[in-house]
Length: 323
Image (cartoon, rainbow, N blue to C red):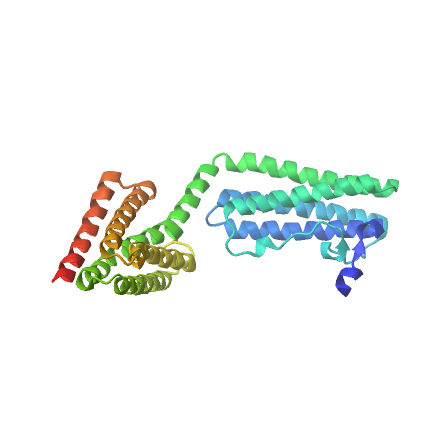
């Protein structure tokens, strides 16, 4: 609480402090943009070029502001940052997140420039001192220049690179989430058919069948998720975060198995079995559609493969359970 009350109000800042605040803000923004550029360099080189150029622009403005400070107030610049000023626009450190998407990074950079410009324009309107108004107007113009530069750089560097970067983003989505999730859904939906229906026809007891299906689904989910996460760290294959892949594979495996297990919470055996059978059909159709939609496998071919595999496992379970 003492920290909050000790912050200075913007209206109490001197022109030197306002100028120092602008200098530190420009320096922070340049560091953020360079961090974005380094993060995006390998996968999105066109966007990385944009952020590098924007960081260079921030540096140029910071140098100009420092020269103005030296001319008016000398070489000693007061240490003052956004968090030291009450009412100054605050920024959550979203750029520190390890899992920002390309769209999120672009949105953060846009909001940074917009917030800076809006703040200085509003502050200028509230100021009654002529020199302060002029200074705030200059700072607002600087932020406007940043926005214009960002727009120019976007037009210059992304006309040819946008399509390639969108393709890269789509590929990363496929490799990191869709493919592991699809593998998990296939494993959970197909591999658990045998134990679930074998138990169902062997015992005729819905509760026992449910427990077997639950154990098989959860166990398979843990196994698939762990295997996916530890088998490939993604550095060489480019398949992305092993944690995300493991979660996608494990969760979808469990969902695939639980889909035709949950109906056995119904006490009536044949009602539960018929519902479970139709759930299996829906699961297999969903798998075929995902393969066609994201893996570019012809729908008829995908349907034939999935239905054939599911039918064989289902038949194995029924035969074994009925003997």
